[in-house]
Length: 181
Image 1 (cartoon, rainbow, N blue to C red):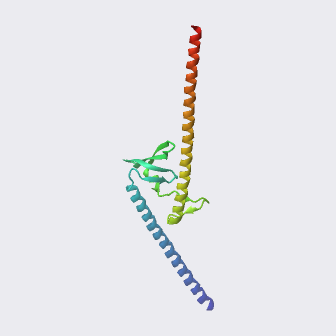
Image 2: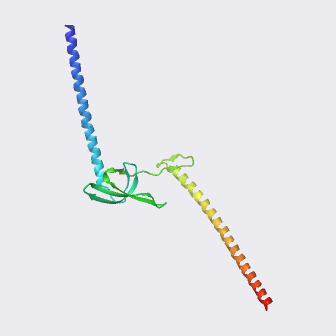
Image 3: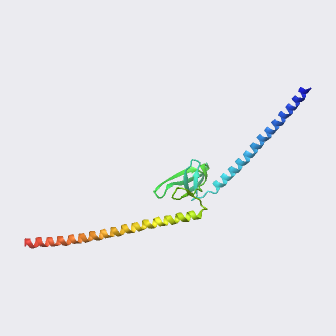
């Protein structure tokens, strides 16, 4: 009798375990579908809100600025401008809008002399960095002014030398013409 009672308890435990596992699996599937649906809605909203001038990043990691958006039978097609305007190395890519990962919200990091990142909220460190940059730019502009002054002096001396050479050449020419007479 003891074995029968133990077997019954074991079967009930197995049934309860199976029910709990099935409920967990169903819950996992339902919550997974809900979060996937929210992510899809968010992505669709982002794609619908795209406009020219937006800075974006693609799934492949390409950064660019939207130049044009066209609606086609294959969905939205976006032309983006990539590259660096300072170096004039610019290229254009036409891509399907579905490969856009999101809006580019990256910010350039501000580093101090030691290479440490200055936090956006750390205004005192930013002010110190600005002062240092201003000092450096002032010294650079002073150096440029000094270079310009020395360059101007050199130009003036060169002009004076040229004028002296012209006068000497004129005198030589006069002497030659007077000797030939």
